[in-house]
Length: 86
Length: 211
Image 1 (cartoon, rainbow over the protein chains, first blue to last red):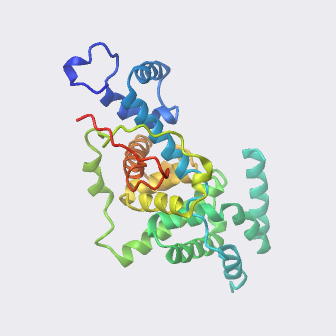
Image 2 (image 1 turned 45 degrees about the vertical axis):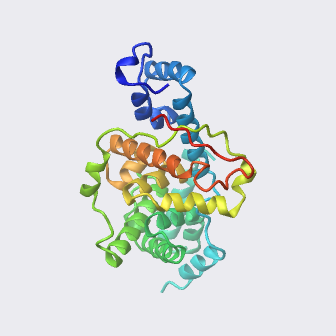
């Protein structure tokens, strides 16, 4: 429900304000009052919900643990370096 | 193991290393190998350089272990050494490519407007097992500017706290939040399933733009 500023009177918080806080929302770094306003907004705004879901997916993808896997033999070579210290 | 048990255990290992038991150092570092590697690659980008940086950082940590202060977390200290080592290498190799923190500030002004609003349902876990998906995620992370990439890797790849990230990068906590926010939204734009259509085969992704 992205509308021009003047037509957003029925929504307590604007889309732009929601996007500004999406990351803090996911990290639970916002006040309960703001959380409540954002949740009310998500119920009625499919666009912001899509941005929220997508951002949550990104955090999940990046944090999955399979990204930036160490190359094969990394530990072995590191251990060897330590063993070879004078 | 709780955080305090872990710290007690690490303190004992550090004591052993400082009294000459070199083997104990490997035990101390082992749980953080991936963390060290991911930190290094988030700065230097290529696996071979990242491995060298990781090795250098671990050797440096070993030789400076006596200067480690117990009020800090060992993992934070280790990541900080790695990060400095990696940054130094990039500056040495490509000084013109490494944006200074000051250059970044102006880009953080103003609001971020998402590129599109297409619905993006949860990604099935099995999809992540595909090498091309992992590669796409890494490429997207690598496409971020250093100041965004570093915050994202520390927070979302390594799961460090806002406070730890702020300590390691030497930036304020509000700055960590702002950069993380930008980084996540930029990644969302870049990783939207429709970019190459390869995320969910047979289901064309339609961009939905509000304007």
